[in-house]
Each structure stands twice: as structure tokens, then as C-alpha cells.
Length: 145
Image 1 (cartoon, rainbow, N blue to C red):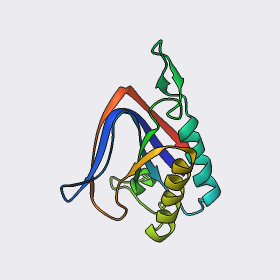
Image 2: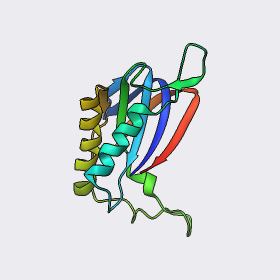
Image 3: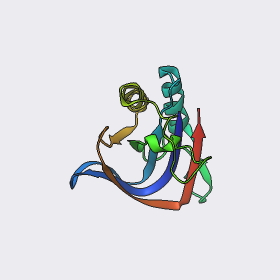
Image 4: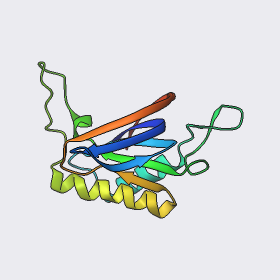
């Protein structure tokens, strides 16, 4: 699994103009799934996101996790994180898992975050989503599990 984690002051997802998920301060997480990813990796990713110390403490130092601060996480599926651009000008999506494989694993990440105590918002799988965010810092981290 691969995730792009952005610390945000706000983030939202719209599908066909309809707001389907939104958070205030917290983490906006774009998650990509590849063919051999497992539910154990989904659980591990959720724990990593929940405990990742990229939120500011009282001194403005990235020393807190979302678990210790806002608890808000927006999770958006993003198969394009597995786009291969080694050859040519058009990315290959062959490394991205098919939707029927990826969707249950994205759901597992969301369920584990909720179990840990997160207030989780999501996009809508298999739709054209418009993601808006205000990156705080800016802070952006890439996670490969």
C-alpha cells in the first residue's frame, strides 16, 4: 500500500458537486493499493497514520500525532499512486490493484482508523472525485507499507 499524507487545515471531497466527505484540521490521506496488498497491511497503514507525529505541539514542533490532536482523517482512494512513468509519456496503471481488490482494503484502512478512535471522512470509490485541501505547513509525507 502506498499513501500520500498531507497535514491540512481543511479538506473535502465532492462527487458530481455533492459534498461526500470533509474534515477540518487533520490529515488528508490519498491511498493506493497494489496487487499483493493484504488486510494486515491495511491495518498497519491505519496504525501508522493514527500515530504519525506530523502535527504541531504547543511549541510549533511536529511532535504530535492526529491521535493526540484533532483525530480527523479524510481517506481518498487513489489508484494513480501506482502510475508507472518509467517509459514513454503516458503512465501505466498495471501496478494498481483492480477495484474489486482495492476497495475492501481501503475500507479496511477506514474501519481500523475508526476503531482506533479517528473521526474518518471518505471519498466515494469508483467515482470522479474533486478533492480540495489546504495543506498546513505545507507538510506532505509518502508512506509505503
